[in-house]
Amino acid sequence: MARKEIDVTIADEGRDQGKTFHIREMPATRAEKWAMRALLAAARSGVELPDDFAGMGMQGIAIVGIRAITKIDFEDAEPLLDEMMECVTIKPDPRNPAIQRPLIEGDVEEIATLIQLRQEVINLHVGFFTKGDQSKSISTQSPASTSSNTAMSPEPSVRFSQRAKPRSAS
Figure (cartoon, rainbow, N blue to C red):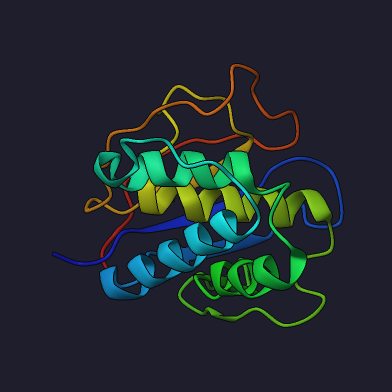
């Protein structure tokens, strides 16, 4: 089965409005190593892990990681944040969506866009959000992307809108 992929088009006003980003799931071995490095960084920073941590699965591990993010030293967090963005490419020409390339400085001009893209990376990997969640980006999931989702926050994001629709295989 192919890795999950989504397109995210920024819908709200701002310098990134109308830009389309493509997110592709990490290979399982890379995702596992990323998660382990994140957990070790959390543990080094004094985050208490629940007793049933080993049996929590990737979604539980990610929830613990999100709760720990404010306690992790930036030196530990920075490479993890950078690696998350390696899953993201941009489709720079709306008239030719088949063209995509790695991100370069200046492709993302709003902090809120970076936060949204990171949220979408996590969602793609561990299925956090329900399809009814009111994230405010337009996400197009490939047919292989059928994960179960759990809402992270009772409050919807106010900056992006999310709409899932089938995407043709490439």
